[in-house]
Every structure is written in C-alpha cells, then in structure tokens.
Image 1 (cartoon, helix red, strand yellow):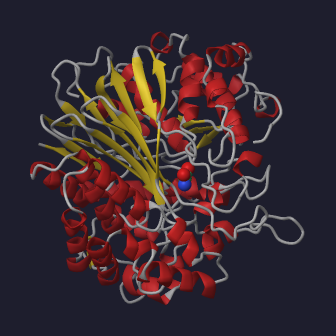
Image 2 (cartoon, helix red, strand yellow):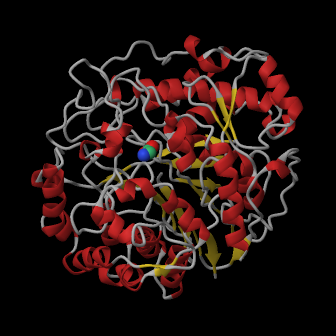
Image 3 (cartoon, rainbow, N blue to C red):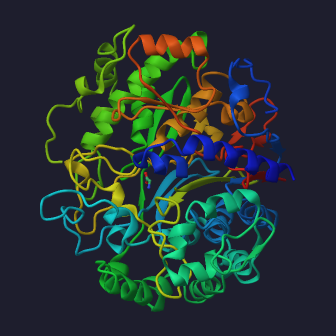
Length: 592
Ligand code: GLY
C-alpha cells in the first residue's frame, strides 16, 4: 500500500514536471543508519521532494539492494541458502531481466566491481561491442547529419550483448553454485509471472506507444493492446524458454546457437549489422579496477570503457576544500563541486574510450599535478563558462540502466551496473526471444560535437569502430576504509550516474550522513555541456539558488536523478545498512 501510494505521487509529479523537459533530456527523466552519524544534515527545501519515506534496513549477515523487490528477494534467498555474493549477484542479474525489463537485461551489457573477503579487488567488463560491420559515420546521413533515432530506436543502435557472458564469467570465477541453480528463480518468475506494482507499471507506461508498434512486444508488454495495470500478473513465457535454454546449454545457447541466430535474423530483416560472428567472437574481460583515495577512504571503481575515473578526478580536485564545514549543498560546496565536475567531464568527453582501441590517460588525469592545475583555474566567486573549459591535457593525441549491490556473510561485496541504455533499449525484441535489445551504440560519438541522448558532447576517442565498446558512465563502486569494506554503491541515470554515485559517497564520508540520509538527499549534476547544473527538487535553498545564479550558474530543474542501491557497513556496530531509493518505489533493500 505504502509503495503504491509512493508510485502514484511520483507519477503525478513526473507528469507535471517531466512534460516540460526537452527531448534531449527525456532519457534523464527515464532513468530517469542507524549509523550514529556525527552530522544531521540540514537540507531546507527537502519537503518539496515528491517521493516518500523508505525505512532504513539493517542486517548482520548479508544484504541485497536492487531496483525491484522480487529480484532483491531472489538474491536474499540465494544468500540464505549459503550462496555467496557472486551467486546472489548472478541470480539477481537474471531476475532483474524478468521483473525489471526496462533495465535489467540479457540483451545489454554492464560492469561488475568485486571486493572479495580475502581483500582482492577485481573488475569484470561485459559491456556491449559494436558489430564488426560498424563504421564511424553509420549514424549520419549522406549530408553528414546525425539521423535522429537511428542510434536509439533501430537495429543499428544495437551493440553485441554482453550480459549472459558476463554473468557466466563471474559465476565460474568466484561463484559456488551452478548456472541452473542461480537461474531457476528468474525462469520461474518469467514462466509463472509476477504481480505488477505501481512502480513497475510506471516504467512500462513510459513506452506504451513503442510497444504498440511491434506485435511481438505488444503481445507480452501490453494487455490486449492496453497498458498493464498494477495488481495484474505479467507472464513472459518466451523469455522463460530463452532463459531455460541458457540454463541448460550455457553461454553457447546465446552466443553460438539459436538465440544468436534469432537476433541476427531480426537484425538483418531490419537493416541492422549484427552477424553470427559478432556473437561468436564476444568475450567478457577482467581488468584492474581504478582506485583513488579520498580523505582516508579508498574508492574502487570501474576503469575504461567506463568513465568512472571522472569520479576519482572530481574527488581529487575537491579533496582540499572543507566541504563538510561549508555544509551540504551550500553555495561554496556546490560551486567547487560543480566546477570540478565541469573540468573532469571535459576530460572525460575528450580523452576516454575503449582501452582496446584508444589510450586512456588515466594516470595523468588522476595525478596530483593535474588536479592542482584544474583547481587553480577555478575562480572563487564565479562560474566558469563551459566554453572556456577544454579537455585540459592539450590536443587529443591518438586517441536506463540499473544498479544493484550485494554483500554476503563472509564480506564479499559485488556492485553491478548493467543496462540496455534507454528504457527497454531499442524497445524491440528479436522474434520470439522474449528480451529487449540494447541501444548502446548511442553511447558512442555519432559525430564529434553532436550531443547524444544524454546531452553528452563527446570526441574522437569514443568514435564508432568495429568491435569497440562504447564509453560508459556506469560506475559500480566499492569504498574501503583501512582496507575493509565500507560501502557498495552505484546508480542508473546515463551521464548523471557519475554525479549520483559520487554524491552518495560524499554524503556519507564527507557530510557524515547515514545511508538513508545519503540516498534521500537531493542530487545535482554538471557534465560540461550543457552548461547547466541539473538539480532535483529541494537541491538548493532559495538563498543558495539565488547566490549560485548571481555567480553565473544556470540551473535546470529535473524531477529526479538516479536510483542508488547502496550498502554501508556501520563502523560502530559492524552491521550492514541499506535503504531503497525512494525514487524507485518498486525497489527494495533487504538483509538477514
Ligand atoms: N548506457 C549508459 C552508460 O553506459 O553510460
């Protein structure tokens, strides 16, 4: 009842505010502790926010936080049965593909950051790849103009999916259960169906018109042509069959069998580029995570092709400023945070790309000297126009998502962010495979200087090339304190992921909030271009807002950003603490 009411309130608010947004930012709308924290942050204006209160959850042994309550329960059951965090994460990955189909997926890709109980930190990249037939200008017409919708709504937008390979690779390396065991709950949810909550329906409703255009999608995601209502049961028998095939035959079924064949057939029939070889050649890969220090905490996060290095670069720039003393979202704190982000995003958009194709100057970007140089360029009382900020290493040289967090009894921690990019990807399903295909090709630079659906203006390093992975903002992150697990965090939200994830960390480690306060707190974001601060309702008091505007800032009101799924280890009690992000009322944090 509580969640239903919440969803209605959020929906009502988004209808009012969301309708005023421009198409370029539709995607942003898509994705739209009992710790005795030393500070109780005072956030005037919070009462203006449209989402309700979610309870803090504490647990001794294990915790799962996801965007859909049934997926959370799947992970929790696996933990209670003796599975470890990786078993639970793989089970949740498949369950979300069923109960959170906008974003949970087997038709997309993602990243997994792991901190193992023995102290080892590892990272798994299962991001989609561009088809081998892809070309740098494939999103442009003969006149060199980017064709609207080509990268987001057509089969040309589809990258080779990585999720099935990624989940299998993680399970084989660090799991203890069989693929059939961890997939069983997802198969049951797809076959028997699940009762839709208002939060689920709200997401489906975003795409009703698109579902109507494709009979095989409408047959599942509409009820005789009409939107599903809360309380009805959504069954996905075709997806159940696809999942059963994977559970029986493993990754071969997906990459070298009937599923690949069905996707390639649909792609060819719809002017796409996917080939059987694209599927056969797909690999997930292990990499060293990026690590940086902030005020005694170690941030362990995703390396390229993620751009989570932007979190570390921003933190490096702001580290010397006394943000806690200035106060959460005070004029000064916002000014230095936003200016740091502006500069770090300029670097992101200029230099970062798939490391298999371009050199990512991470060492330079995260160096103390670079941070000092950027810090020196910030004026104390004035916004710097983005037009005056460039990728700052000199000329370029050669170069709606979902997040969940799991911690088990031993202290293994898994942070997963995976995606089909926009809600429901291209909003099409190949034949009777039952799953949505991603539109991750839109994360590439379709043309240097032309913004993508997140408004990101990107450069040469992220141009389309055959077999290349598009640059991502997904930032599954683990925070350590004295080498021990302190926090697992991450979010959906396209380019805003970086800010949302970073603010979740800063709110706890800098402003002393508990996890509930940190997630409830209103969010802001700046990504170089557009030259605006994106701000949730209540992000600033009226006086802070006026002061920022007087300094030259333009503020864009957005109704919400992100959906943090975070778990914090309370340093005093050692208990795990989490909370559902109230912006996504269908989600749940649960532990035991
Ligand atoms: N698809 C959003 C991202 O990877 O940044």
